[in-house]
Amino acid sequence: MTAPQLVRCPWVGIAEPIYARYHDQEWGVPQPDDQVLFEKLVLEGFQAGLSWLTILKKRENFRRAFHGFAPERIARYGAKDVARLMTDPGIVRNRLKVEATIDNARAVLKLRERTHLSTFLWNFLDGRPQINRHKSFKTVPAETPVSKAISKALKAEGFRFVGPTTVYAFMQSMGMVNDHLVTCHRHEACAELQRRFKAPVERTLS
Image (tube, rainbow, N blue to C red; front, side, top):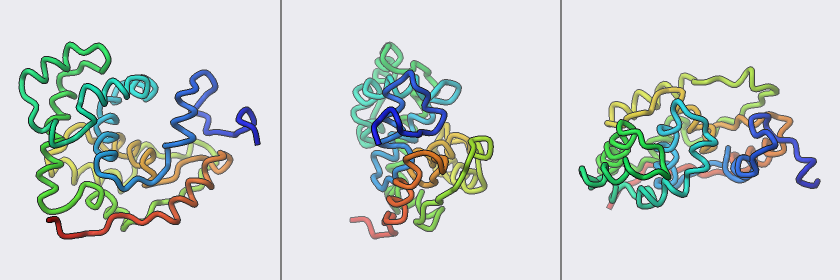
């Protein structure tokens, strides 16, 4: 099947190749890596009130500005870093979201004293991605009981900009759920990755 014949989820559209690449290569692929999960959680927070395409186009700028989303580095940010970020035209210059990112990095490090972010998140699904079979995006929820539970737990750990809707978008992206429509060429591909996925398990930190 050639690229023009591929059937994708309707939110992709046809005008933005970057959106198609994101849909075909990332969205719905289960992810166990702490830093990747942290990056996406932060970016979903920045996306609130904006389109994901806006964030996607700025993602490399975000990575540069936030030192590759290394929580150890971001947790040490001070007033000079906030000022630097607020004058960076390559990112979304929202002070509340910038400061929340610093707080979230500190929350990750605090959480790491007893578990990994990946383990913390995947435990809400018992390590098993949820494979849905939606035929229309009209039936895809904006939030779920699980996203509400994760949101509440993250807030209790000190995370910010992690409401249930933001968390559910994060879950869709990181393959915790498979919300590709059954007609989409990526549904079964992601479902297979999800069936074979080995979620992080609770382990003692050294």
